[in-house]
Image (cartoon, rainbow, N blue to C red; front, side, top):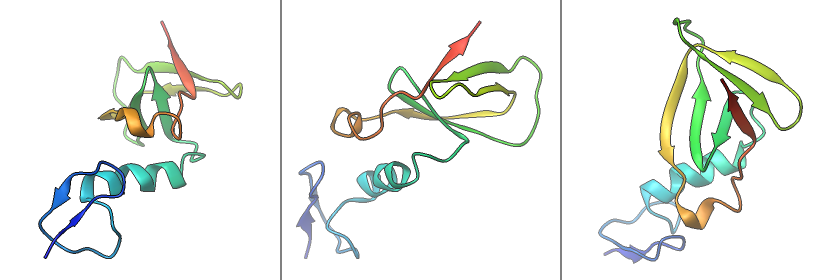
Amino acid sequence: MGFVCNECQEPQNYTGPEPVCYGCAQWLARIQRKQHPAFVVVAHRFYVIGSVGHENGKVVHFHDGRIANATDLYDHGVIPERFRERLPDNATFVS
């Protein structure tokens, strides 16, 4: 027996511990930890700064004044519209 996800309203074919689908659960987990210093949101796109250095990184200017040279930036994709208010942009990329 399935359920309808509380976030995306899509029917699900399984029962999980929460009344949300796997995809929405992932975004909700990011929202709960949105103050993590490695989380970057630019133009509604979610990134995580990793620990492995590569050349040609991006300079990240956070809205709180921090600046990071992100040489290991993982792109987690576009934030779905329904989560953008809860996970707003927190930085810009500096060229």
